Amino acid sequence: MKNLDKIFYPRSIAVVGATENKFKWGSFILTNVLDGGFQGSVYPVTRSSATVYGRNACASVRDLPQPVDLVFITTPAVTVLEVLRDCASRNIKDVVMITSGFSEAGDEGRVLEKAVVDYADGNGINIVGPNTMGIVNTANRLYATGTLVRPMKGGISIIAQSGNVGSQIMEWAERQNVGIGKFIGSGNEGVIRCEDYLEYLDRDKDTSVILVYIEGLDDGRRFMEICRQTTLRKPVIVLKAGRTLAGSQAAASHTGAMAGSYRTYESALRQSGVIVAQNPTDLLYLSSAFDSLPLPRGNRVGVITLGGGWGVITADECEERGLVLPPLPPDVYRKLDSMLPPFWSRGNPVDLVGQPDRKLYLEATYAMAASEAFDAVIILGIVGSAKFALRIHETVMRMGYASREDLVELEKLFAGLQANFLDIIIDLMEKYRKPIYPVSVVPWPDDKMVYAKEGKRYKVVIHKTPEEAVFCLERQFEYSSYLKKRSS
Image 1: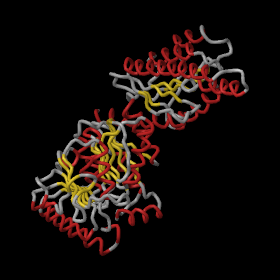
Image 2: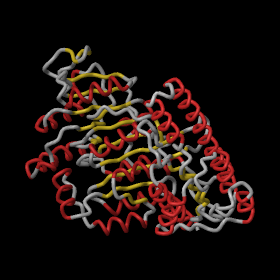
Image 3: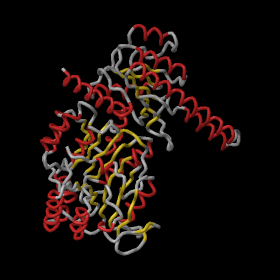
Image 4: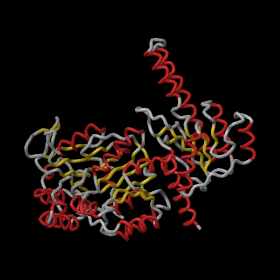
């Protein structure tokens, strides 16, 4: 296994090609590292200026006052071999090669990339890339990519053969309160390949879930073998691009990847215990669920809904995805029958017949979470339902019959009630070790996907639609079943 510790946990960094030109990669990387809060030493390397952003610059890697752990190269492709020779002269073994213009650029680029790889192999140099977006490690505040993203620290790590796709996922994560551990834009994978990063993250104590975006693999057999080992310890979620002829051709021109048959990839991935995603947003939903929730022990689902229609839709989604809605056991039935109007649904899904009573939701949630008849619970409608009342108040306020001060007080009240309900969901998941999926059918622009409670193992993932929640539950059940099969 390749030792990548100095790539992700460097004590010192040099940026070759550092510049104050805000439209160049030498500026993107340097400013991102400095602004991100990295605590180690940072050295600009350039021949064009004595200082860069107030820091003394060195003319070359050979001129650094001391050898560094990690070098970022942002200069043109024709200069890269010289920089690598400088690194070898200072016994520097780890490089992030932002530079493009290699195998993705045609025959001439392939020849140059081969020369770079041969030199690196001959001198024991690890290279991320070339043609990489960069790396992130939130554990030591190392943000070194071409985009200014600052996701919170968490357990989801990303390997992406497209840095733009990976950066977009991190940006979504930042907006939705989803924690990220590490990010690697693997680029052309001249020296360090996708499977090497996977093997490293398998052993990484800061990583609980691994996301992988791949366009093609040079050693598919080794990748699948490492997946098979890794999935016994932590979930691996893969988005394989290039499913179509057009996508395969685009992948070849993007990173030089040979895409191969999608059906072959999908089959091999599933046999290795990998969760297969179909698009980038799937990656975020699935990783949040796997990082936040306990795995279901079976496929029996209890559904609680404010309105009957959402319950019907959820029941359809469950059955189509191999999940079942068992009848209510007698104790749960008796409890709900004593609380609900005579015209309630008397079955699963439990239809609260339009009564947004917090106590009814709580009692139904308690009963289903505690019951051995259900392996998971989906709750539709209570999270976010206060927004209906807030909208009515805003309407009355515009009519001149309510004050903005009252609106602010209502917002505080409802926010506190919702936080309390989400705290209860976390407590129930901690107690019964079964996932609970609340769905907010009234999304609000400032809502976050993930809600956490201090000192608790599990978190709440708030889904926007029933089908999104059922999709994540199906994939969690698939993975849970795989683990049982492997353990037996």
